Length: 457
Image (tube, rainbow, N blue to C red):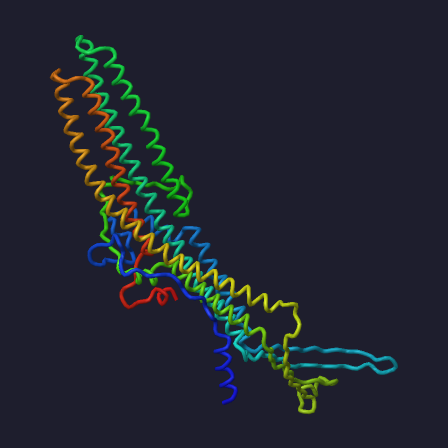
């Protein structure tokens, strides 16, 4: 009864006094609108691209950064086993056979077989705290792995969008080159008829060359982004073929955040920071307990005899049991320094945890703003594109009729070419904004009532 009471009191004495958390959790997001529609676990399927889905699933299996993160999990688990070992008794077997001769005496044999056991009574909870700190570190390594997975998925998605965008811009540039060539032929016909000057021809040729000079840039962007995708899925670039397609064929999935408080349980970086802070709390408890005596039991029991056939008889048995108490007295302030080091680490991780929470809220707000504004930008850019296309068609038709100024034709061409390219960039920006929102929300959310930590276990 007394021992239980002392253990309870020791648990109160050495419990960690964590610095107060100063992070404020807002009741809602400033840019959030509509009902909560958190992302599904396989949220990338919402873009309705089989090729993108295959690339992401392949990256989750073959990406080397993810593999390295798994290796860190294995290391953390092994370290937790090592640090938790003092909680259990240590038992060794010792056996030997010896033949010796003392000066002036006969030769003799000695046979020995015994078990040695030792156990440190964790009276002050030092070993339990060390084990708990290692276990929390192992938990943090799992969430850190999820951070790597989420970053990899986002990188694959973003790079794939870049491929589609570059392919679209390449097609636009090739179409613009053909349109500019078509206008150039019409101007040359007018020049031959004497209704256009050499300056008009030169200006149009300059536009044709300018459009053609952009084509290699887009081709370069396509091939370089495919090479980046190859690295992300763990393959040499020469072995990867990306079909791509049209960036406008992708579906824009609908996603809206829930309450900011829900983000604390969904973002893996926040969960990792929380686990690291719990580990630091346990390390402070361990450092405090180290000031008090270490109590251990040691024992040995076995058989020892000069005659082998009498080794395992009762008269050859022996044992010894000892109780050891070690109390630090003078250590040059080593224990005090270790406690201050643990407390400093705890203070640091409290601030890191708060900063991670605030960064998460900020990431979601930034992504929500980007989603809303990129949608409006795409809508407005479509109006610009439609007007520019209509103006160019009218200018080309009147050019054929000879009733338009060539400066007007040149301006409508340049306006159309810029509008088409900007509309493609607006679509890319919208896709990237949605992708950034998924990443800011921590990827796929668990169904209601299922904790992320339970699934990861």
